[in-house]
Length: 227
Image (tube, rainbow, N blue to C red):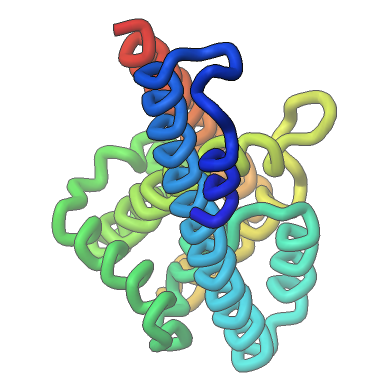
């Protein structure tokens, strides 16, 4: 609170009565506490982001998937949240994410898998009939992506679209490649173009939901401030 110790040098008579001046000091101290908490939160968030980036880089190095490596690097360069990228690449690669932060995303994916009913795959399933086990895994993957998209909604929406408000190609390619590799690993053939079309449809739906949640949160805050 050192920034506000200097208020003690002012006299209450300088334009405001003693009671008002005391209230003013209390408000400033409260503001200082809030700013300090925000800064601490930002530092904590930065550290978590750094951990997640290290996990992604370790995955790239261990898996030796050149195409995935290039796409992850491009998305990180655009400042796409690492936790969102991680939620995409985790499908079929769970064994690579044994670190604390990576495991957290993996456990979230497992929880969603147990809750999954496969309904989110209606669009994809029109083109290809999948075994139920794979449907459940992909459905949980999609729900996990949506869940992590809500962690940094404003930042995500700023980084995943190009100047024409179209989803950036590296994001579509990464999700399509991950899904392609997962299906291939499970002896399922799929057209890349169809997978890309599906990921485009799905991710645009995610971003629309994220935008709505962001607007709802903003409105709730505005209503709260008015009251």
